[in-house]
Length: 209
Image (cartoon, rainbow, N blue to C red; front, side, top):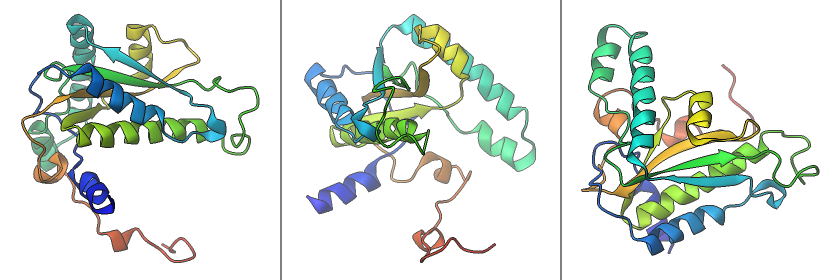
């Protein structure tokens, strides 16, 4: 089991261009969502919700917004960075089978969320744990996940009718893929390399600069 788990962690990728659009079996989707819902949460508040977005018009509208945000970011770049970014695909919104929007409801479990009184963001961290569970479960099921981060929260909130108090944390593209790349996209395209483990592990205290 341990070997399979470490293999799964190394196999997981942020998918952009490998989605096939093929259907996702409903039982498989329930298993993946069940794994996400089994994540630990501060005070067992379970502050997440999963909005399944299948409608193509809704996804197309979101993709339009994402494209505009991509252009805004590209305009800030120049030289080699601009050339490199131009080659990078940032989303698979229409190519994927469906999207899963994961949200954070800070009122879930309120007013006394055990463990959140000193760290206000503990609920948000809990949602991120659910996302990681979802991602690993999808990978185990030979599905791809792509996290879209080029968007403004108010736009997504309005598009899906998300209440003001609820924060949209992730738009995840999900579906079968032709394959998972051996190397992450940003590393393959030369945007950034993964740091070695020893560069981020420290004994006893944070390193002095």
